Every structure is written in C-alpha cells, then in structure tokens.
Length: 359
Image 1 (cartoon, rainbow, N blue to C red):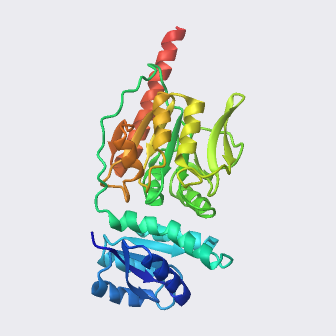
Image 2 (cartoon, rainbow, N blue to C red):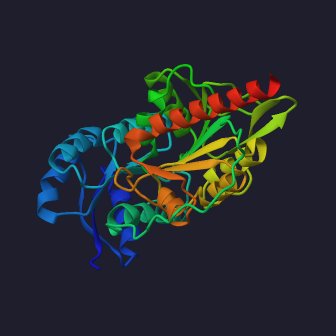
Image 3 (cartoon, rainbow, N blue to C red):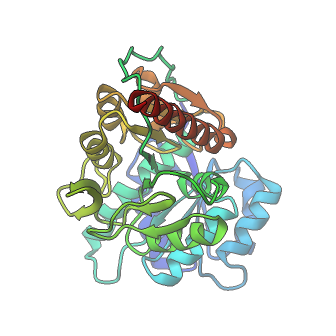
C-alpha cells in the first residue's frame, strides 16, 4: 500500500517543520507539500494530489475557514483535519470548521510544552487520525447477528446514552436538534473532545434544538428532556441518590486512551438503570463503547449503531456491530426517529402493563 500523502497548511514555519518531522517518522505517511496559507494550499492541491490536508485556522491571506469552504466546493471527499489551539477562540472556530465539513481536528501543543512533549502530542493525536481518515478506504468490519438478550417483558426505557468521536459533532448536530421538546427521558452523551470544546459543543446544540443541552455538572439531577454532554478531561457517570439519579464526574485514568470515555458512561447507566437503557454508538475512531455496549445488553438494554455509509469513521459503531452487540444499525438520518419510537413505545407498553396490574 502506498504512503498517505499529506498537505500541511500552517502559517508558522516552526509548526510546519515540527509537523513534517513527526509525520516523516512514520513510514505509512508522506508529506506531499506544505503551504503557509490557504491560497497557496488551494493552488498546490491539484499539483500534489494529497490524500489528506492538515489545516491551520488562523492564517494571513486566506484563513482556515475560508480555505475549508473552497476545499469542500472543489474536493468534497478530501479529508481535512483542522489543527487548532486549545483556546476559546480555537474551540469555537474548530466547531465552525466541523460544521462546514472538516473531517476531524487535532489541538496544537501549547507554548509551554517541551519540544519532545510537543512532538509526542502530535504523534499521539494526529497520526492515528490521519491513518483512520485516509489510510483505510474500507473498515473490513462485518456486522454480526446480534447475540440473544433476554429482556424484561414490562421494560420501559428511562435513559438514552450516546457515545461518539470522530465526526460526532456534526452527527450530534443532526440527531439532537430533531428530538421533540417533550422528550420523556434524559439523554447523556460522551463526545471525545478536550475541555472548552465540549462546553461550546453543548452551547451550539442547545441553540439548534428544543431540548436543553448543557455540559455535565456533578450532582445535577437527571430530568426528562435534558441533554448532558460529558465535559472534556472528565469521565461522566450516573448514580442513584435517594429516589433521584444524579450526574457524577471524575478524573480516573483514561479508558481506551480517552477521558471522557464512552465505556465509563455506558457501564454506569447499565449499573444504575439495568434493562431500562437505550444506548447509541455513532461515528468515531477506535472501539470505545464496545465493552459498555456489551454491559448494557447483558443488563437487558438495547444498543443502536450508526451505519458505515453515514459514519465519518466506522470504528466505534463498527466494533460494536462486529461483536454482535448491535440490536439494529441505522443511517444517521433515521437515528432520532428510531430512538424516539423505541423510547415512546417502550414507555407506553410499560405504563399500560402497570395499569393492568393495578386494576
């Protein structure tokens, strides 16, 4: 297999050199060219024919957002990874870039990082994303028939738990705003993102739909129609507190190299709600959520996954499907409808059964 050809676009000569050096260490990646701004990058794309572009946001002449718009017009399938600073401005610009069609993002090392530390951060955060987005054209994963699960007859869904990563902000932007304002159960979400990014994602989703979307806070009581997103660098769990269920946050070690991790959230909802859980695994790199999905199903709950065709990366949902832990696989545009249908029908059946028992 030929090396992945990358076009590095950044106005900083230092960043370009560090990126080139780190990427050149990997035999599966080749730096096809570099560019100091978007205008030069657009001129180079047809000449060097890259498999992927890393794109800085703040640049002179033509910035990253303007460049991304043009790339999407001319090369709609070309993967683009935004390379942004871990600041409020960087977070808001990155979310805007993702909404405009960027494939993923990576955060730049801070000025306080040592040279070795900066290189390690780039190596760990950027290279896997390059390989995931451009290195493999097909996942090779095959959905297995779901393993049988015995579910209670009078089971009602009391919570929806969603896990996602690469491509997740846009996928959530398609799913969450479509829920009705009277959605009858809380929704808890893990999106792999650093601090600041998760807060701005919650604010963006809150502005788009009818449900209240917030970043998770410790000891907040879960109520119907609420949507909580795990804050960056914190695992989010749920636990019973008297007759209520509340959110909890911790900084226990990362799982699957992630904090927040989907497995941590899924495990806690299975422990707290038993069979009354609907889990959803959406687009994302890696396999976070697989073990948690298995625990939800072993407790009697259900798991839906996003299909490969509509996923930016079919890593997380594909791993669940390949392990036979997906009850159903749906395209992105059907997920809200299917979640709503299952929640409403399960709760109607549960209430009807309870009414019959009391008569």
